[in-house]
Length: 173
Image 1: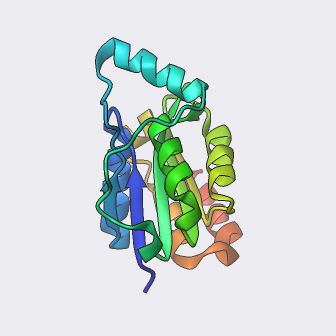
Image 2: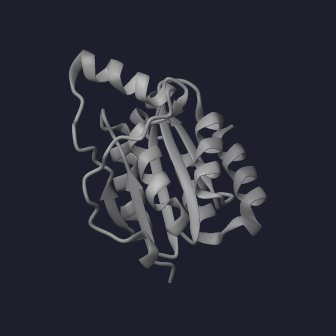
Image 3: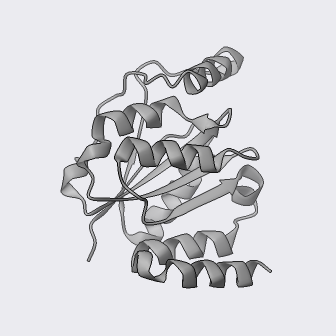
């Protein structure tokens, strides 16, 4: 059995909802990436945008789990202004090299997933086993086909990637 850790940051709750569903489905441990100085309200929103666009990495609070103890780490992030969120960037800069295998997911208002996944791949130095990108409206609508396809990719690994995507596309049609 693959020992799996899900780490994520969530400002509005969308990424947290997906992380919790994944942890339940995969029997994974869950750890939230939290910054030392939380940013709230309109000013916090603006600060998040600036940090993401400038590729800044804020200080983080200690985590509960050690990434080196896991076979697979699933990293979840919101997309902030078409960029990787600064707390997840900080976590990947500190711990991304300690993981054996990775999968990535993101939540977003509309777009930016490919850019975010490219940044995550660069920071880990590894090709992800699977990726999942959900818009906020898909999270609200519980986009079951995309979610299930991601879970299957994580469970079965890359050799079935094409088959899983084909099934997901067919299920979504």
